[in-house]
Length: 464
Image 1 (spheres, rainbow, N blue to C red):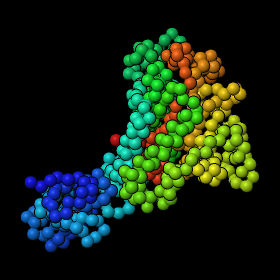
Image 2 (image 1 turned 60 degrees about the horizontal axis):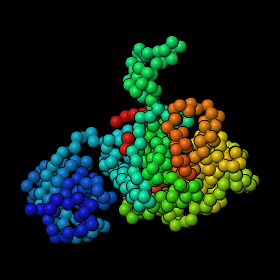
Image 3 (image 1 turned 60 degrees about the vertical axis):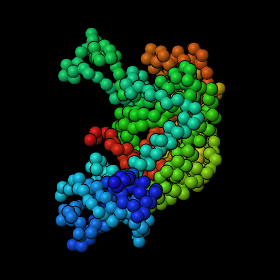
Image 4 (image 1 turned 180 degrees about the vertical axis):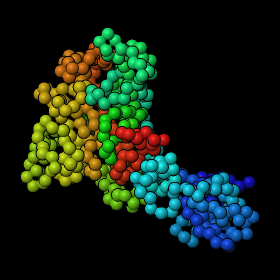
């Protein structure tokens, strides 16, 4: 009985002169009356398998009707190849699962990424997207591996929440109320007490606050890795309405500890990708980002520079005398991508961590410095994209945190449980957030975030 092998295993084991079974989709075809050459892939590897079908095969008349994208099972003898690949197959039997319909939209020709987003349910059949999503899988595995090795527990935080972790208000409301007949109170406001949860609820923008409760509350080190949602009406190549976030939180961590953890994580992601997805990275680099592999190796092998926000602004202002920036730089403003990339690519020429940002441009939960003007925040900047990670040491002082919330006119009753952490065994603690799609973009070299998530959700777009 012949052994069924994934095509990935065919190339790993190279069982030459053995009869095996493979299954997959046809990527290309050359046919004649005497022979048919089909290239098949099953999605497990970047490498395709060439199969030669002799015209004497019993169902050869059916084989010659096959088209690109049709699905088959082939039993045959693996032999050493005379071409680029080490092995090819001589078919003994071809079973046809599905002969593709004539209107199959993917043919052996150049297809734009924009068009492929319109048929996202089929784009994993292409070389580009099979590579991207195998890489995405490996980066997810690397994430769990890294934090587990660092003694972090994987925590599943709520997707439904009543609190805004970022305080920006860009949240999707959840409700089962009848929109045609909303219940209202005496003053005309919607009465959310009659809603499913008895209060106003939203899709989560971050699992950070809940992760803090477990880090400070007893587990010490936790991380979340799950879907988050932002209703920001932004149609850029770097924004999604639904995306995945990696958010570690650690008790007894200073900002410096946090920066070290982030540095190790970035390097681990790149190293793992290079070890597990070399073929994919080389293919994507050849098609979309020729310098990407060189950049990744530079980041993986470089020490990360650390500089305060104040010093970074001074550097940028001095550099503006000879370097033209689109946006002017002044203390108190958030740095733009062009500023971040200048620091990492031109000035320091290596990954850079900027710390101690003005409190007025950062979130309420960040620890206030003694100067009263800045907070213990950090952004990790990498050559090629700018900010990849944002994090901070969290405010562990009850009075300072409640004052900050009062200054921002936040309702403390929505955060009573979060404030409890500052009363019951409070300790210094820190954490960061990495948008997983941003990391996949960076390591793959893809330039649009819609091309690194299976089914992108953006303003006016919730197809599939």
